[in-house]
Length: 85
Ligand code: FES
Image (tube, rainbow, N blue to C red; front, side):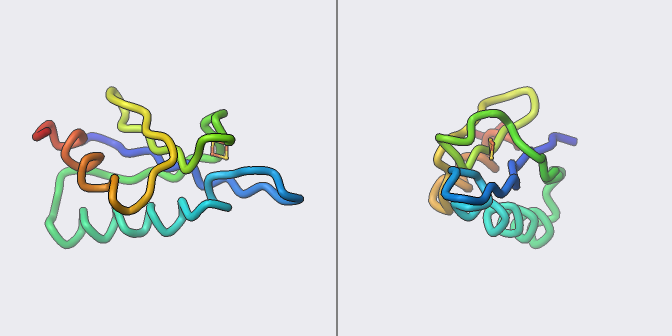
């Protein structure tokens, strides 16, 4: 089963972070899609991928690392994780 890692680190005091840019909602959206379609994927929340300036960052394990992810990018990420892109 392929894992999709979503950085959910939140920083304070005006520091950029993935959660500060909405990554928790993206993780929930991915989980909802996976559940509703019974996809053989899982989401793992991750504390920081070290690229905070260009988040939200999402990594398909064994595949691409996506930056500045928004909801519009999620279908492509799911597609890659499923090997159907
Ligand atoms: S906060 Fe997401 S990569 Fe650091």
